[in-house]
Amino acid sequence: MTENAEAHSTFAADDEREVVRRIVAGDRSAFEWLMRQHNRRLYRLARATLRDGTEAEDALQAAYLSAYRSIAGFRGEATLLTWLSRLVLNECYGRLRREARRQNVIPMVDANTHVDIDAMTAQDSDSPDKAVARTELRALLERKLDELPEVFRVVFVLRSVEELSVEETAQCLDIPEATVRSRHFRAKSLLRESLAHEIDLAERDVFEFGGAHCDRVVANVLSRVAGEDDQGSSAPAI
Image 1 (cartoon, rainbow, N blue to C red):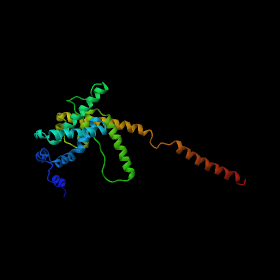
Image 2: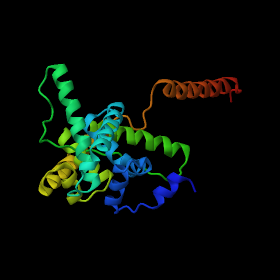
Image 3: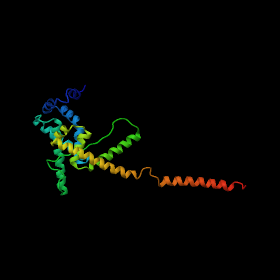
Image 4: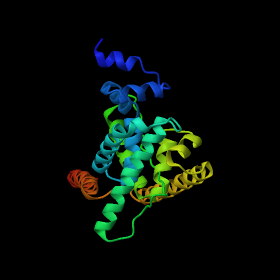
């Protein structure tokens, strides 16, 4: 077993104080373990806030660097996930404010505003056609999620995608549990409405028939009609 593997195997998910102690002592394998434990959830949080994959990845890296430099001050008053989530959100909000100043518009969020999002895909092996369909559906969902107001996107991701509890989500975003419930409900309602609109538009194109398809059928029928006419004209008169 490698040194990193040995280090990783000694960490229990709830043994946060030991993880922190080892990181403070300079154990980089402990910090790697911490990042791998929370990477997906924190990336989704950043992606929901910034609506850009590259920006979200950059923000996540910056937040991790901030965490590494300041983890000695971690007192355990919140979970590591909550602490890291707030660092990620702070980094994201800072980027949004800087971008807002560059664009000379009112910032979308302030230091006291929080957000939510998600992404969803089955992991089971499937036929290529189903995999393509699932990819297209995921892309549609992500696009519709990006259209939601920021305060709803982040809550939706944490609650529906990452399946955090109301209490955990409230702690991560530093908002009341009642706010989590109301934002999650509103996010789902807005998402349903948006998807329903897409379905309504798509219904008009169901079993679409035209263009080359139409031309082919018409040509085939006319060819057969011509053939029957030719047969009829060649038959002897009675």
